[in-house]
Length: 435
Image (cartoon, rainbow, N blue to C red; front, side, top):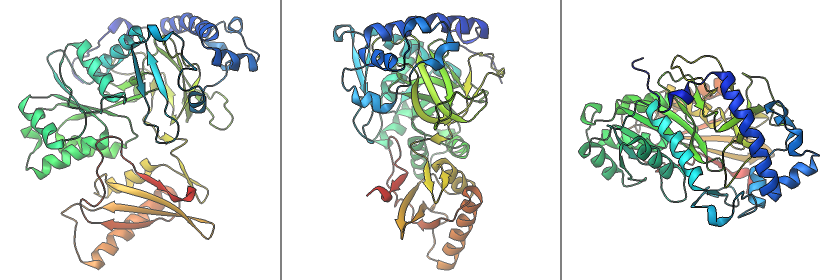
């Protein structure tokens, strides 16, 4: 496994009972902060008949009301602020692709905490102050670029703030400036790797040793594909704009789940239908309570992400609870003819059969019956005008998807480069049933 490295060993390896003491202490302060300084959340507590005096420890967390993205939209722009604007130094925002944008506010201390978490993530991926970190997440309102940029600075690494796009320039900087750690979305990492291949480059031609990839769900198969193409170890990182951005949790070198920064967050897993808290190890919806957020404190925020939690000891020595790789999202989950389908399941089948991670899922409805069409891009080596060969390949994919999903999909193989590439979050699903 190699040498164990931590950014803040006294916190990252803190005994679990000490973590819980810290969380209990911070929770009481945060609930009081929300009650006194965030009228929107105070009203929700009153509606549920709860006051800060009812919360004695984490055991009482379930008594508090949830916050949802709908609440954040209703409260836009200033309704959930916990500090006056004069104390805030930055905003970040979601893309707004599914509705009203969510705007999150940060004090200087909020930024410092965020940078700290991202520094922990970079160190967990093997980073040191001697590394060169290329941040190819988008900058601006999107949290990816600013988050990893701040973490790299805090660690003391040379930082290349390329943002996303201009892929040939990305590759030029990786090579010319000897970048050792690449930070971007997994779909963009796959695109960069594909472009490197086209340029005749092999992993031996680039100095990268690790990648920190997040902002979208990705499969283990996609991880291995990127690792093989680039000759790196690929690490997952997780976060939400609402909570701060990337760095809420991250993988260590053992990659047995992502360690959640429990000194800053309390995670729960709930049944997405009933809201009941589920036992450890159960698959359900991830809920977070922020413990130190000043400008934008969120209590029991429903992420819509599907995962599970474990406190089983990790060989890396970190003691913070781990979340498993995301299964998907409750709002990304497709229900097709009564079957729950996650895009990551389809991606697994495609990569296992040797296809690149370039695909589109098109859902429709004909005569009151759901239809599932999957457009899959062939590699240049696969591409042929032999119709019999194409049909044979399509039939094999149909069978693979039927085995994985329990339903039949229509598969269409398309020529290389015909599905639009993403430099940020990939758009995988087109659901025409809502039109």
